[in-house]
Length: 446
Image 1 (cartoon, rainbow, N blue to C red):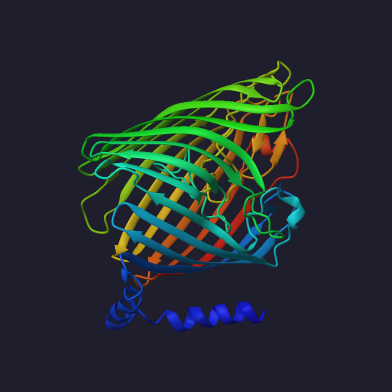
Image 2 (cartoon, helix red, strand yellow):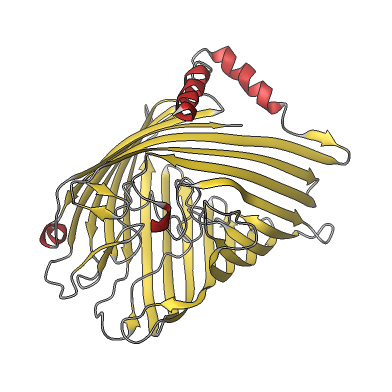
């Protein structure tokens, strides 16, 4: 309790900066002194962040829905980092993380990788260098975040308190003016609040290639491939004994902007094995938006998401798409009731900027199952399944309202409300009712 009170005092003391303009600039100059510090032939940066967030969930928790259970909890995360560089040829980065959850209803044993607790941990620690002078080739190895594009295929999932996807990896990168090519091998880190995760506690491994072409300015075309492996022998198939998992994913992504029009899209195909079963899955995302060059810069957008499901749960073929290493939240409703698995999602968005440091976003989601015999997948557990497919595909609707405010160059605030309206599938398969989510977040970074 003392720690929580002290954090709120920090918030109250820091908020006045930025309300009175000159104080904000003075505050920013203070932190600028921590950047580009000469240390012999090297340059040194010191940085960090403190994030505080309160969340309330009504009629759902991370592992269940519709049982009239509520949850209110407080999340805290501290990150401190040092960055040593020598020109463009050498870099050493070390980042410390300490994350905690207060009054959370779920226990550590309910998670394979803890999304909330990670006490006194090395979050990132990597060495990056260019082995050949005047050749745009770099080698990076160590604990690191790997992210591309919109984070849908590879992303850190940083909304989670500990950061959902973190890698111990070796990556080779080639970068020219119009081409970026990355190749890496890595293993994802399990966040364990009871041990120091340095050199152990890995969940999955992957070999990957990611190429990005910038042939036309402001228009990118990406091609990617990865092989995801889980060799613990515990992947359960539809029939037969558990076995290893080996998934080949190949796909493309496009994104760009032309005047006030923007677009993006991703397609991915999966083959291989899911335990003893054949893997045959695919996923699609397509979106576009238009920003009106008028007062408040309103933007309207529409997006469609599809992730394949399994139409026959007993044929020995796994057809449910697996979003192995991408960010699972924010794209399929902020409530995290859905993920990129066995889903169709139409999203309609409206955003506007009434002030230079204030942005408001409204999202409306329509959710349907891709296959009625497959399950309802949240970002955590499987919520429900009707193997006979008699409950239909209508999952429901969700509205999200989010406000972002950049108080100063170092302080960001956000708050939001979301509500879920259950559809026929939800009402026919068990307890139901509307669900609510509220959050308030304060984020300080330097």
